[in-house]
Length: 313
Picture 1 (cartoon, helix red, strand yellow):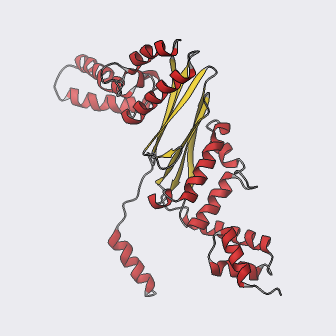
Picture 2 (cartoon, one colour):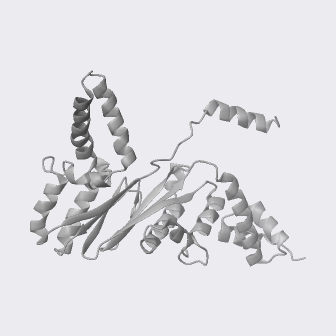
Picture 3 (cartoon, one colour):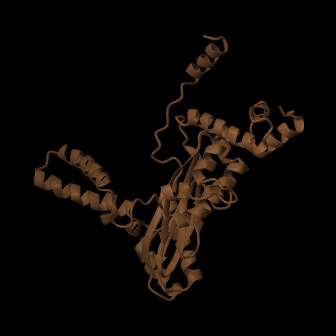
């Protein structure tokens, strides 16, 4: 049997990030074969990662990349903001984001893509990171936009590093106009989307479920007035148009950088600098953790559980 030296353990630890005792065990189990030990630790790490997979990961980072005529946005989650500030995690998210335009919004393609500089997939790399860093992580979603003529502008809010933050936005502008002028205006619109939480470009693109939810709310309020049903129906549709559609749809929102004109009017005004008509083809807005149901933590119960475990109870 091969002698396991301290230098071998140190080398394996540096190459895998695993604990010293785990590295020593791996080398012992594989008779000192470094490559086999790495694989042994990887499998062991995947097993550990599986145990962490039920823990809620609502922190992390949004990654955004623009390649002039195309762009992509990715959400990669972690359990804590502490990990989101980890340079190793940030580098991983940046590299995953760089692969996203080719996936064209298909999460399965992104997860199956080869992680840069390795033979592992993105999915395998993230699982390995779970074992190394010790938190549940995952690539939650990805989206992409592209234009045949024009630009795709990007914006990151609460920036943590290049292309990384808490909110990521892409805006696609179709135009034959000047690229620099289009990009400047596109970024302004992207900043607006981040601030205004736009839900859709036009009413036709709104989620029907969201419309029905608002309609039910307005109907309940209108019925309480005691007015006839035909009057109630008109009141509801009027409020939907004025209070929901105009406030939720990008083109009809008041442009935050102007405070007066609508985004549609601001787009028309921007055509002068661009030298050509501009059409907002679409946008994507990702806010970190939106839609993730977070568990309410009972700190006292957690402490009691820990104390009981330490006593063997």
